[in-house]
Image (cartoon, rainbow, N blue to C red):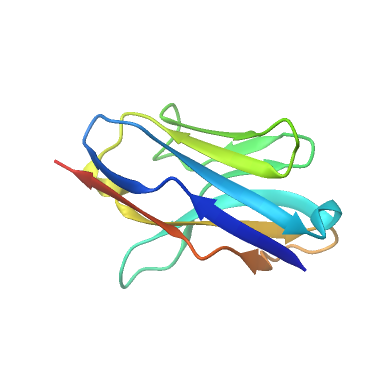
Length: 118
C-alpha cells in the first residue's frame, strides 16, 4: 500500500504560478511512476505529467513549457511547478502511483483544487 497526500492548490490569477506537492508514504519502494492528473466536472481524469523512478518525465502537450514535474531530495515527494497558468488549467489535481509490474495507476491521493481566474 502507498498513501499519497497532495497539497499546494488554491486560487490564482491567469499568468500566475502554483506549486503542488505529493508526499508518498508506505511501500514507497514499490513505486515505478508518479503522475499528476487533473479532472474537471463531467470529464475523465487526464494525465498532466509523470516521472519515473529513473526521473524520466512525460508531459501533456497542453502543459509543455509551463509545468515541471520533479522529485524532492528524499525521493518520496513529487512536485508539480505550474507557471503561466491559464483558466483552462482549472481542475482537481491528483497524484497517482503506478507500481512496478503493472501498467495500472493503483494508488491515488485525495486531490487538491486549482482554480485560475481570468
